[in-house]
Image (spheres, rainbow, N blue to C red):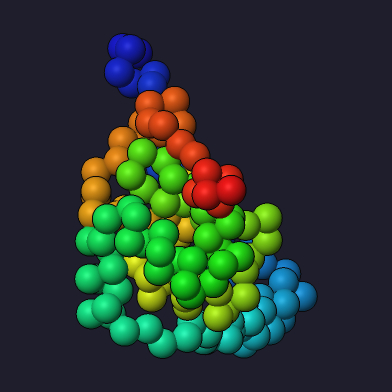
Length: 149
């Protein structure tokens, strides 16, 4: 015999089994599993955000830092007291999710949620703040409420 004649033919393996090889109990169980849905349908996600004026929001996003701080102080003094100016941007951070009306106020004033930094941020017309590293290391920061006192 030559080397080629001694070799065995390789068969392709499959992961599925033929139904005829299954036991009768397995067939019944698989038929029942096919009838039942594999996952429960998820309820449709409802948008709970309060309405905002998008045109006013766009305009507010271009305002300089001082004007945004004035608006913030007029709208909600507590937010102004929580505000931090980082470079020319304004950040407002919360320990817990704020009430819908507070989120609406911030959104209306032009703030957006930054998931990475876990704070509401306002660009104050400066749309290119460095995202590499902590901006506190590169830019001066202060609390306007502390400076005013």
